[in-house]
Length: 634
Ligand code: ZN
Image (cartoon, rainbow, N blue to C red; front, side):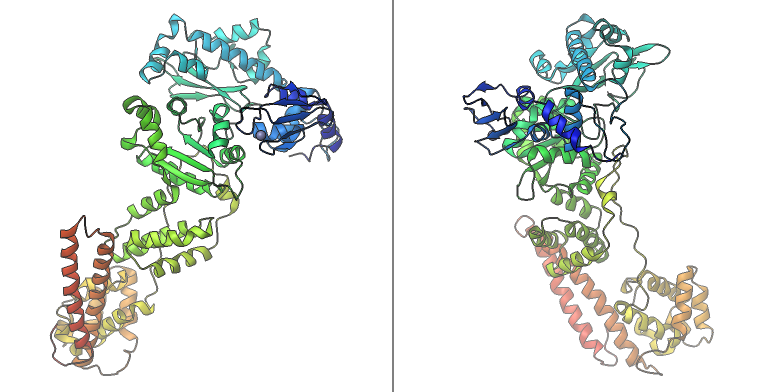
């Protein structure tokens, strides 16, 4: 990247790009006395003009909404461009050669035909295509539109056209209008193989326009079975005027409504944009041939006037299918660049807005948008759906995954209400959620560029958490399990029959579960009572190296609290172990209870409540046993 544009060149742009001339391309201006000009403001909706342009002082001001500034500020605002983009564009149009501060005097954009020529070529191409839609050759194209509920007026409104099958028709037409082949190729309209040929042929084409209405590219849909290009959609490739990472189809029609309604609806295709606008959702746009990315977000934000203080909504419509869900999760990663609230509208049965309008009418499309739900909620549902919330470890995993999401919420005031919501959805205590959210927040964040520049071309992938490493065997959570197994391996005679009711399910650490399985495979503690080779026998019945290592460890580590454990000593551990198992079952039932609606599912609710009461009783008995009554039976 070269350095910044020289100040004197910027000054020259300001001088040559007369504000009255530039504004007139967007607003009809009338004399208003004292050398001032007046018109209807492009930045807010108004019936009587309060938008003033002062040519002698080279600034504009709107008394209605307060917007104002110089010619560069006007174009930035009205076309949603950056400062540099605006200067480059005006320089090109008004014949100013831009140079960079640190460069030699090399002009900024010396290569290729002028931007204005590329725009003109597109204007000619768009008119040509639109005309072709009426020809006999285009009957399939017209049927396509008709089958999707678009009549001739709709086609005209959106400038839809037809690229003839002949393959050179546009090339010839552009030559006839005095465009050089070099210009047509640079515009992306014509390609060069052995000879020049039309980039789009035998396809239905949508003009892709900039905010100011200039056509800068096309989207083309396959409509003939014998189309040699398989791709359903072809789009203009990158050109000097077409940047697919920034282009939003429909922005020219949507931008005023977006500003007024403080809302943008992002749909997936050209026909969806059409359907939305025709149904009265006039804020709809779509990215073209690429996933909605960070640059698109930036463009939207400019048109929404999105500052941290505003509450503009961005609503994404998705199919309810898994691809749509993946896309939504992808947006969530990009979402952090929005201060706006982000929502998801999921159509029933995976219908897109175009299908929806066709099958259920305009009202259904408006309703789809009205029934939006916050993206975070949608994403939470998605994460939770991946876990079995009826299991304690499932709830822990779900909580950990979801906590990362909650911790990433930019609006910190919302974090608490989300934590509560999450607690309710998972069926755990809200304090547990808060702890997990704090833990997630303190984890190192992803690199900003990783998050902000998703590769648009890559298929969106769901964020799969890495498989967690097994917790340490000496973690205090597993103390009872550990001591129990030490007793079993070192003092099988002392443990004896007390373990008759112990099962693998009493152990929570996978390695300890493996150890218990090895114990069982070796015949259980009673068979070890008289066997001096017992510990080795247990070791021999294990195959997992982690389990084998654990058995060795458990075989040598001193037992806590006694050097000669009696059956009474051992039985207290057995009760304690089973009490913990019961507590986990109680937590499972409580979690399920919390997620069950007692009114809608009264039967289920009451059954679980009964189970809970029984488990509590059982636990009390085990506790009494654990404090040491020799011979007490479970
Ligand atoms: Zn205004």
